[in-house]
Amino acid sequence: MNDRLSQQFAFLTEADKLKSVVRGTTLNDGSRRENSGEHSWHIALYALVMAEHSKTPVNLDRVIKMLLLHDLVEIDAGDTPIHGDHDPVAIEISEKAAADRIFGLLPTDQATEFRALWEEFEAAATDDAIFAKSIDRVQPVISNLETDGGSWRAYNVTQDQLETRVGSKVIRGAPALWGHLKVKIDAWFKAL
Image (cartoon, rainbow, N blue to C red; front, side):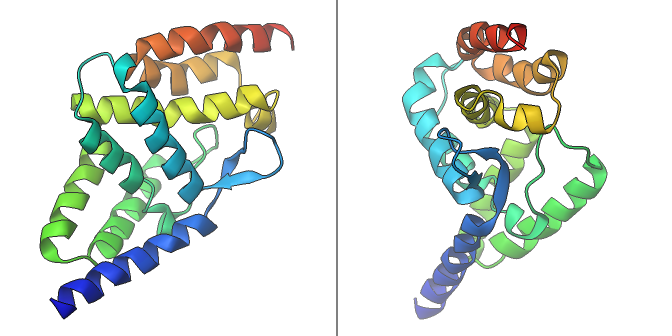
């Protein structure tokens, strides 16, 4: 039991480092950029509140687990802003190595479960993962709308890019959310 507890505490101590990973998205008040720990908590709360808007029924417990775990790889791999210019193959390799190391800190049963949830989220093939990916994309949209374009301005995001990189993913799992946001997004881009 002591070895199991030591492994679990080692994982939780490592997970604290996620609070030091700064993201491209700002807080809704624009005062500073959020960290990945804050983002993970906030999108878990989004899922809890918005689950009724999922395109298909989902297991909310699994969705929340995915959202709490999905960005842990950023401890090693860093945050990759969706509108940035990155090599997807290099990112995938880096994130898989990070998943090996970070989830490997846990006892075998938890390491296997958490890694499987992370992989399911990344693949976005199940209803739970599709909804989780949708929610992961919604929260930064709200932040950008609340800050008059925030990181959209910083990355020179076009409306077409937003539709392709974000909208298409939100529509897959929560079309009603995108329909609601699209009105605000259209108005924001029209006012430019």
